[in-house]
Image (cartoon, rainbow, N blue to C red; front, side, top):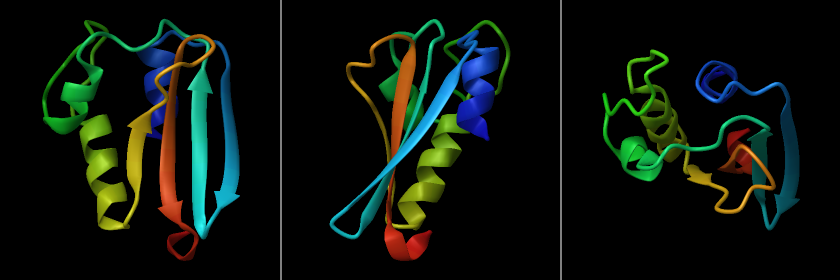
Length: 98
């Protein structure tokens, strides 16, 4: 939910694409949008709560909490370094956690 909300509110995306892939007992879910892209410092902000990078509101905890929750499920949240446009992130989980 947080990724979709960020795409629309902060990225001003008009389209969000969600795709998944199984590989070696893991599930990778890619969430990509056609919005404004990631602001500088996004990787740092994902590591620190209340790190606000957008003037469009928000508390600066959404991606941080999402990453922490995934970590507790033996998963991860990482940026796609070269999306075709906009912003893309990949959620990685063990299949048994799904």
